[in-house]
Image (cartoon, rainbow, N blue to C red; front, side):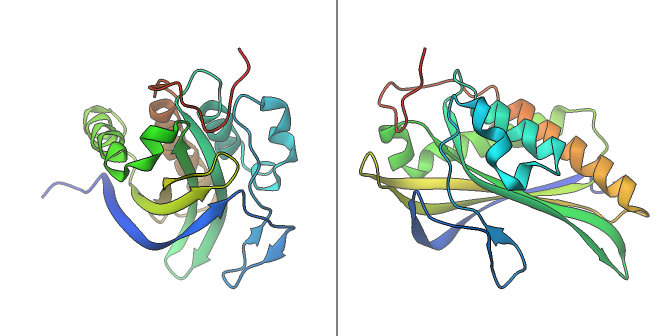
Amino acid sequence: MTKLRYRNLLSIKQGGKGIPYGGTGELRPDGDANYGFKNLKGRPELLDSVPELLSDPALFDAVKVINAAPTGLLTVGCTSGDVVDENGHRRTGYVEFAFNSASLVADASNYFPLYFHFDRYLSSSESTLQVAYEWELMQAHFLDPNVGGFTCSVFLNTFYAGSSGEAQKNWAEAMALLTHYLGGIPQGASDYLYAVDA
């Protein structure tokens, strides 16, 4: 029997949200804090102002790469944290992104090719990492450009490991695979949600 290397799932969440959304670090019921949306597209100098990134180098790199000027994506939110219970150690978190295009973000079906080709990318990779990737689409309204559409969150959950250090290593590898893939998504349209300086 073949050992499961990864899970890669796609779903649609009911409900939605407005972007930008506020947040001052107040705790949510799940224990995470909400620091609000920051427009980081093409603005790497602002990365150090995002509290969620300061203790997670892998998540920092992901957000930096996704928001680089040449990509067709921008981040909406992110977080990560450790889980320790009777089964061992694992790490969990997510990065939420959207197309930086009014026309592309408006149609949820535009996200499916990203999900599908990431699955093919995982299948062809030599990684033996055991991890779950869960892609979740959600309705959103981008208030500044007055554009309705969808965002996509990719939740990462490493499988259980024997130590915190091993869980951190697995998280970094899992996030690096996603970062490499999303960092290669080109800008496919010029109707930007957030303009990027050349």
